[in-house]
Length: 296
Image (cartoon, rainbow, N blue to C red; front, side):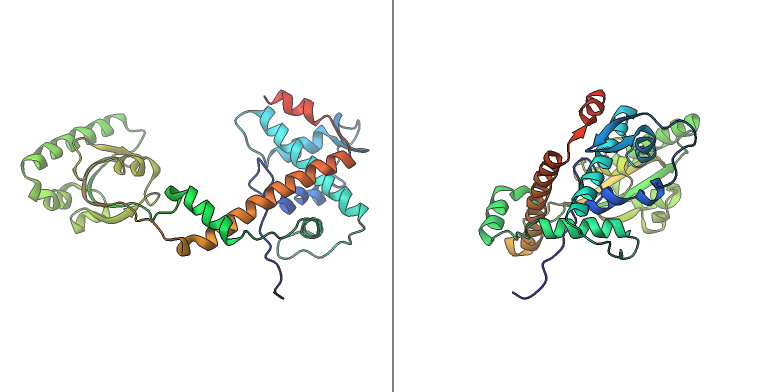
């Protein structure tokens, strides 16, 4: 009962950064770096604080998106959040505190604001049990397959070389359909992978352990020799799925801590969004809707 509450990171929606980082990063960089001459145009305000286009442009590099309009909207939203939290910390008279590690004093101050505002609500046992029962597919050991292969290597930009590698792979598959017992010998003679010295054995693989394009294809294969070459950035592979195992269902006790952390984070995320809405009532924001509309 006397232990300190756990501090879980909270992420602003549409960002992969924690709130203090999102709210505070590069604030010191912004100060004193305004361009000389005419001020940058400004259409975004938080109460009486102007956030100009130069501020948004600097922030955009941290919010990559397919379209510049979306990047601009994400950057503007992050700057608004930072200013809302700064104003509230100022209103409450929170003193600057030294940051830990790479954390700035402003980020530490914002973290202090969040921790004293949001309740530490740990999910109950019933909440965790209910989530576990409603999402059984999420709680399984990973599927795995045991694979051996023969790599016919060819650079991605070598069209003639890749055509030759594919043709050779097809010939090897045809030979293995007739004589499956010679796989290890063919791997030793033809494969350009270090596994050639072990008969082409890659061992047991789980999803995500190989290059994405190879991973996607081999986990769709049935057990046995694939009837076609598998293409990857490295060339073409003759693939034999030696064995496959479906991940077993995990028991509640094995995942209880994971579920509890997830549910607590979701609650704190919702509380944070509600807190930001309340701050927007206290400190009116003007211009953000227009910027977001341009990103739609």
